[in-house]
Length: 268
Ligand code: ADP
Picture (cartoon, rainbow, N blue to C red):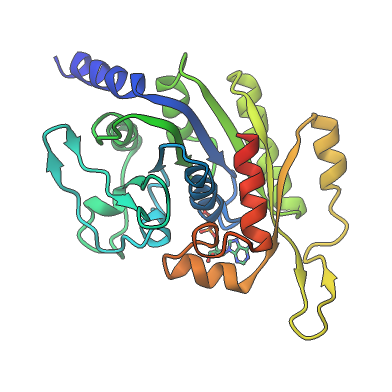
């Protein structure tokens, strides 16, 4: 029956996938999608086989970061195709799956009740043809809702870890802590925290300053025994690169940002 078929499909896919890394933030707009894409690319640079699953149902932005805007899903013998990206630059192309590939247009809103979201998450892992992967990075939606619970359930027993993205800002930090508590409760190991928009350099005088001063991020991380695995500065060039489908980890591997992502990939 349907449930059994789904379960065996999921088991088959997961048997071919090494480590799953859930990139979480709990709050939107802190750079979770940007971090997911660049982490994945930094990992692929090391020669690993990498996939990116876009589980951000209401804001499926990985298609933009991987220069796949307008891409439409195709059905092949082994399931829904996962387009391989940046194979010219990387030792192995990064495979990407996103709800955006199934949408008629970019501006169609998703108005789904939880049951649909649950089914989509199952399809994202089970119906797309991931092939053998060393790492699957999942761009999680903000919050600790349905998508995260569904994924935590279906990945139970599979090597899975989380990466938290936060900006060094009280509200973002408070929200990230909710994701931290969720992971604690579900015994999902956390690799560490990517601090995004951590500092900005003045384009005129090159002075570095903090966008959000006086946030006790370091102290909080210490108390939680959570390592910071990367500090990514606020960088207009990074935003432009992301929007044009040429993430910094791919195009400017020697930049400060790309080196920080490489360090975070090392921690995974
Ligand atoms: P989220 O997935 O958390 O909603 P995004 O990765 O989509 O966040 O980032 C939100 C916006 O901020 C995007 O336009 C992105 O390009 C930009 N952005 C993310 N990180 C940085 C950064 N370090 N410097 C400048 N802009 C950034």
